[in-house]
Length: 576
Ligand code: DGT
Ligand code: CA
Ligand code: ZN
Image 1: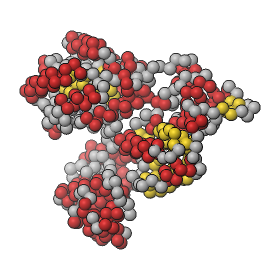
Image 2 (image 1 turned 135 degrees about the vertical axis):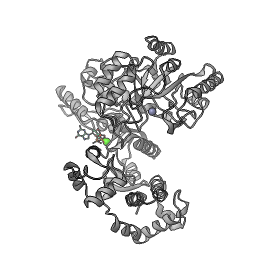
Image 3 (image 1 turned 180 degrees about the vertical axis):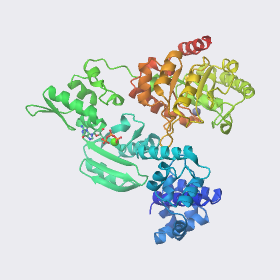
Image 4 (image 1 turned 90 degrees about the vertical axis):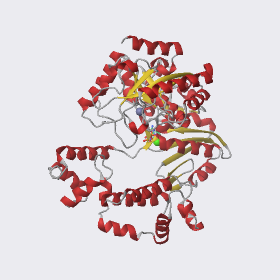
């Protein structure tokens, strides 16, 4: 029994105990143990053999005894008894957003139903609405939650995929005989979620790579092992596939393994039209001569194409542009000189203004804006106007400290309240260097209402940027039900920039809306929403989304010179 399986059992116990109405600290203890097991670098069974289970964070005597019983007997008496009291299928209902443990218990006890299908039926035919304290609205919420659950796929969020890719590339890259390693597939194309990971290795000695890869610690299942291609599943559930090709053929193979399938089909068709057949290995002429390519650039050039950035390879018009030599000059990480959403210890950040500014400087940034939360967002320690006056002093002191190394802007992430009003009065907003307005609460309002709320903020001349417009969190929280077309049209009219929030938990706007924003002439701001220095790494994820949206440096205000950015911020205000 591995860590993931143990974690799943403790999460199940926590779910059932919640429905039973157990006290919260008992539930939290199981959740904490599950979380800790999921993130543990070693198998719990190894601790068990050593007799050191209690060294695992979050594992006390009660949990250690249960792990011991599970590893010894393969089952757990406590859980079996609990399941007799609370049907285990109810735990699945916990995944439905809008349905808490109290309501689950109420529905189960009053209607005597235990499965998803029965729940759906009962919500549809009014039985749920008829229960005390429920009503039509609750029933609809449950149906919506079930619908969203069924849409949710098991694709990997980037925050989960990125560290695995990094580890794999490091490990494979240090094997003997390995010349180059590159991520491929949807990960290389910058998608915000990935199905499985694809990694390409250049080596003359594939068996070394295949053996090492399939026997890595953490591999729970080898899905396939071939001479030059293998795939595995890790105990975390992540699946990865590694392909090995000799360095002389690396370009052809990397192009193939990067995809997308649609782009590859278009490539093969183009090759055919020029009398070649294109494969994973080579470009073959009609007389059977094979051409090998060490780099992708050479392959694209052989077909008369500009090299297409991976983020554009979706067969959405890039082939024609590449053939005409007219690919846009996409924004690059190196173009980014400003990060315009950051949090400090003044609200819910972990580092001081000076520490954050220095970290941003070390990354080569020239401008950093502090957008601590506004007063109504109490849980984050949102700032009152009085506290802003104090923060201003600290910003001035930090600015003196860093000199002209980086420009520090005094900004705010101002809450767009449930009624659409902003959380500070206009005369105060007008005094800030930059105003970013965001939704964090009442995200489930009806479409008309939540859209009007955002547009109200967009139309306020003090607002410069709309932060993480939909409010989504990957993978669990869907964004608000916005009429995005109306929102983007309003932004185009008022001149407000829309954010691509680069946090791998958000990536909001996504590429499709960012692309539409560009079509409408809306400016984009890519920001990390950092709460500590390490979060600043996320900028590359945001840039990948921007590249998928075909954005150029002109489209992205974070690439602009100080003069241009400050003039833009000022112009917006003088429209007041
Ligand atoms: P994913 O994993 O669902 O996020 O998406 P991808 O794009 O990574 O696709 P995946 O993992 O199925 O395959 C990796 C690459 O292999 C894909 O991007 C292109 C290439 N490939 C896979 N199947 C085919 C195919 O049937 N035809 C062609 N031309 N290429 C393929
Ligand atoms: Ca893939
Ligand atoms: Zn926010």
